[in-house]
Image 1 (cartoon, rainbow, N blue to C red):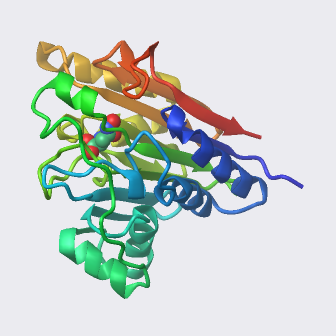
Image 2: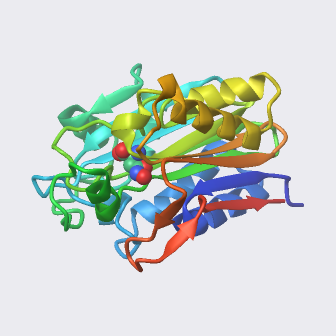
Length: 288
Ligand code: SD4
């Protein structure tokens, strides 16, 4: 019999990963396994557009693909991440191995690649897609070039919650650049007692505000996910009277399986592939 579960994902391109995660959850797999499996199907698919994740991600300003991924298991607050990882498209699985097999939490660059190789991942040269926009300097250029993170949050039938994110980061980014995605509390956070959150947007700005941690802390104080996301995006936009001019979207799930999303800096967002504009923030929800 199918187990109760909830899974949410960032952007419309999380539909296939969320479906994969939902299938696993329905068969009683853990939230951790579901999040990893869902993100993996996007990472390993060379046709998986629009070029933000895994082997089809955007390359950096040196025309090299550098991936960021992180996973947090809310049962014990376990965390693992890799950043600026070259040559290994399955960044979320490498991040999980860091969480489970290393005494460290975040590995970067050549150290992350060395770890991946020594844990059985196969090196693959020439990954990624060239950025059309060069190194991002303005908000418009950042938005044009595209820079989305695939984030999944899952609640399994045992009440455990996991968060995972994977991204090639901002297209045309400087080699070695670290964004919000791999930093706990910034790009993602999960505590099975209360809930989880993850972000997408301009990571160089997002990481100053630890929004994922703040959302989970508000869940702990009794807010629902929608209220928590909106409180955090409102607070950031009003920080010291300063109107935030960057893109931040955040999704959340709580221990009851309620979900919510917040959106800052853009009232509408543009799909770079089609040029179409949409109101608010699109996220994927599957539950049973
Ligand atoms: C980063 N936050 O590397 C990521 C990219 C992203 O929507 O999510 N963009 O800055």
